[in-house]
Length: 195
Image (cartoon, rainbow, N blue to C red):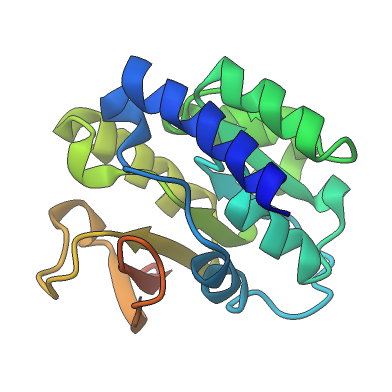
């Protein structure tokens, strides 16, 4: 267990040194944050779940532990090194090396016509450190691919309650803070305002 964490930490540290803006965190997400994020997905859910920015897989592990089949989890990671690490850590998973701003195309290629009917998108993307135009493109893709009753689950280390400008097309359903994470993290659950 400790060895796995140390390996994840080493891989993560290398990525934050080489790509600080894309990584956007000081350490990998902890298991309690992962459990909180995954708790918003129904147990043994059999639909497609999209994970954006899985990093070293802390939240990925909890989504899988929730009973989501590996074939139904589409993890999209920008860093080729982290994708290679995810493949090693979760041999049953087939993560995608790609940009979240191309989410619709990635999903269409992976699952076909259901690419715009996703019920759960779990995101660890560091929106506050990503340039505005890229944030707009990513949130457009999330909005377009979520079903009308879909949920967008996002965490941030920014604990203030001020809404993030690029999330205006989403309605906040639930907010909680995971104090036991290092550093503490806020988890927000959104739905779209399509209806």
